[in-house]
Image 1 (tube, rainbow, N blue to C red):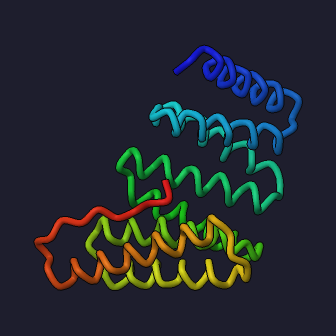
Image 2 (image 1 turned 90 degrees about the vertical axis):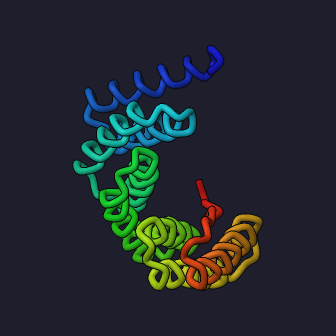
Length: 180
């Protein structure tokens, strides 16, 4: 990791600490979320988990369902990287519920993809197919074709083909395409 990236992480940490101190919990939660994403994206999962747990604590002080959903989604991705799939599942379900409540179909679709991946990790083919099919529907429901929705639909459709192939041959090893 280059020095500038390390500086950015230090700045996010410092900002979050200041926001907590002055009780600006929304800003603190947002800073900790970005810090957690930075750690996660640089494969520093233990530090990412600590940061996202601090974001969870900060967001409890405010009412912001969108920020809560983003934090839960990020928390789920970190838990998957740490092989804590049961806890990740709960985070993705919670964020999915919030994104549906908010009407954000793009984020809801991504959460359905995450759930599909977790269903496959426990060989639950039926629910995996359901999750990926629902994700495709949500991407289509967005009503406009974007690069993200197009990639999401293609990724889900590839995964559906792989899952159906796996159902027919349980010995076949498959590698799903993932959002992360």
